Length: 110
Image (cartoon, rainbow, N blue to C red):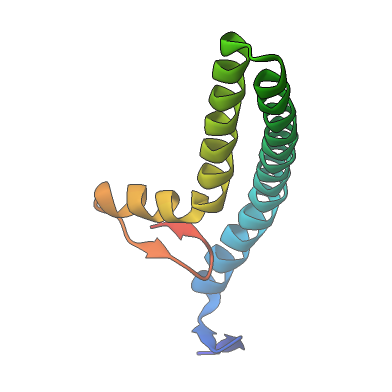
């Protein structure tokens, strides 16, 4: 029986095929997920900047509605940044809650 070693993992033939298919799926998902996360981070940073400017103008012009809108925008931007920062944690938590086992190397729920 031949065994193949990759980054410290030893595989037999059928395990290697499964490993390669999971790796390929991981890389395809990874590109899409990283694009979505990057879009969320960029939009939340832009929302933060806009919210700060709205809040500053609300303070200068003493407008209560603008102040509320600015604070709400800041809250939403912090939630978006936090959700993208802790995305891996929530993925692991959901996997473990469903009774699965999370593979950190492949970033998949088994």
